[in-house]
Image 1 (cartoon, rainbow, N blue to C red):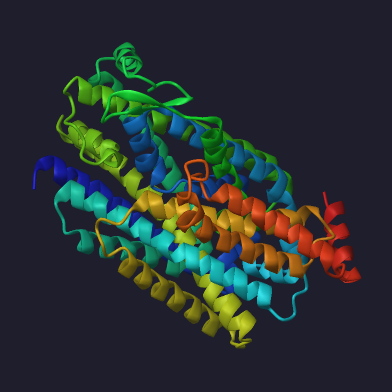
Image 2 (cartoon, rainbow, N blue to C red):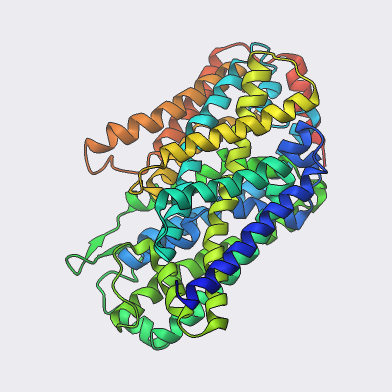
Length: 508
């Protein structure tokens, strides 16, 4: 192992130990399932903002977005970034405060809890469906995070993929199972800072190695369609391909996913002071725009480095930041340590999402299925043991799913994002803003949206090029329409439900 690799390993080891220490500290403050899954609704505005966005910005921030920009230019990645930025802002603007008030008013600590209590679903069918949706889409989502960790260490140190993945999973499960929501949220804040440092350092170093900003731009402009928002660059043919209006709308649909993301919505429910949500919204929105913008630029700069031979051509475009960091580490001990921080940032981007997903999936099984559906009554100590046990079991399943080193990280993330957006998004919006919606519409809409994601992805999208769009958009529309139609065709909500809706509406 080289000196550079040793320095990188030391930085990453320090980072991982720090995450475990944080988990141990918060384990002493976690006395019940409300603390474990929602932090006792005590999150401050900065922690709320950065925790929500760090858990949102998984490895696709430091791997997926730069890799996509490197391959095909700014159109595909650019419209994706615009959709994500708009979705982030709107979610904070119209959902955060109302969900925080509504969930506290009805005593909900998980998303399935919220749906069930909001509609007074005594049969618990809505809760069970929501819990199953979370498990179905989050377990493979978590697996993609484990896979990204395995690929990172495998690429860096030549470590066996499976061993690296298992060690990463143990670390993530360790601090999450110890400290629960508070540990996950605090580590997310730290991880967002590391991710920011990583992005800035890589961009500055990359520009210097590529010959300066003017050289980078000259190189990009020379490639057909590379800097065009309505064309994409095809590296194999060296030509531009049209990026039409349907494709643009389809890509912008990433914004709709935010309204149904359990790990982000839980942060809204955990906010301590609703009057400080505006601060959180501003911090979150600014960080998301800047971080994604830099990530895209890194992809453009990386291509410039390859073209001037300062970086070898990439077999996997998503490893662009890893390769730039490796190059940086060859310039002495200090730069090797900085490279370690950058690579810890990639690890952080993965871990910050995986810990939140593990908590959401664990709560769905232990609280909503065992406790809610099957009504197994346990004391707080027993609930905590089960919560941690379920979290570990889910992590093990995630490792099994990710066992294939060739598994597609971005493909799984994209599909899971669509699944949550179409299943939960319409139900969440209608539950907050339409008092006529009822449990029948919610159940039908949730099922319709979730099923349509599979149907569109596996069947309809392949029928023609026109229908080959991101499955979230049609599935979201179907889920919304079915919810509204079924609600109108079935009895109005009980007066108690309407009274609760009106009371929350009046809250400031």
